[in-house]
Image (cartoon, rainbow, N blue to C red):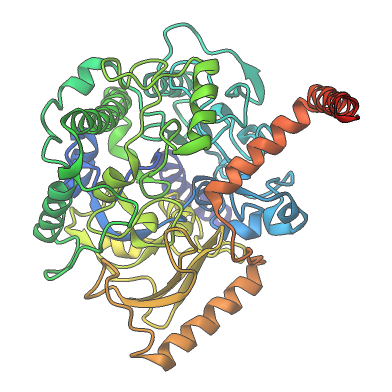
Length: 584
């Protein structure tokens, strides 16, 4: 009798456990590249993003979600839930000076066994897939198949052509794609947003339908070179003809109307290097308006292909049991290749010609075109905030975040502070796992999503960031930040983001005790994670140029040596000849 009762109890408890296991939710993480805070339609952007907007309608959007200002560090934190320095990604390889690599926080390498969200979920029975941009550390050294992904199809670079292997920077001779850790050649007719969704659909079709999945879909869109089919570009004819000065004001108005920022928010001035739209020639206005058309078109195309994946999941009856997270790795990109002044611009354009790139107006955005939006449109994309990618401003750090999923209530804008390191524990929480792990810095956002709590960080709890000398610390509504030259002054400032998200009024001198307390907390954070201060004259953009020169010198030193010897011999012979001619 006792045995029968024990058996009955065991069965009774096992059935709910089995049912719970069978119903474990799927998780789809979607990452856009360089999408600004207001670029999605749900955030008031100009691009048509109906699929992202539908997710927002049945889920939640966040108004205070922070990443790092560079892609590799953000992606490292997104995968691990740890600070970027703790996992060797204190910067990206392109902006890293050689002497920094001796420090653990800047190694650009991951050791085998480093826990990621993929490895943690895989251990619990999840099938794990990635398709798209990886871009974590040195090329080919930290590929996702080593860190928990069952299947992987990735571009391992900060960027590249969306159609083939053409590199977008002189630092590389090709753009490397890998499948399951092995180099591959892209097929004819490839386009990044379409191709990565196709591959993800294939992976899901081959998966065990009885097991849950974690899928990481990582778009190249809208990192430069911005490229898309003409029909997407041409849908935005005339949309950006008013220019960046006017459209930045419009975005501020929409941000206030949508409740993304408080009424009374002021726009920070554009950088001194920015151009006045009204001072451009009609030809230049048309060119730059067309560049932004390409940007909007590429984002719309990415949304379209995301919609194909969502429709596929719905047709299989899986979408209702799938949490979907959509976000960006950092703020919008302000730079490009081919428009620099002086000798630098001459060198860039020579390299572009050698590599097959052009910036022709008629074909702008199509294959082989080097399209980018520049700092002025980047300031629109990041509006109503200051500056953009590479800087520790709100424009560089604050990005959109959309989350939807089973049993989540429809929410208005969630304005509690959240950070990129919070997404790993949030996904663990979605999977029914313990989100509190000693090596993870972040916190689950599920209490905010469910409506149980308005915030997961108290007013006295701080989170710091640092990349390439750009530093910030958030505590409650307060922020201190330091932006190096040329876009900042290299000094610390303090802002009250509750009333001044545009970062227009420095309150460091008005609240000296609070400022010093927060600065001390940042210094403790920097010491804890291994931040190495950069020199006063460090400039990440110039460092890219230095690294290009160093790389080319290493590759071509025999030829340069011969050329130097020939030049010295010619000068020596010429000097002797002139001396003989000058003798009486």
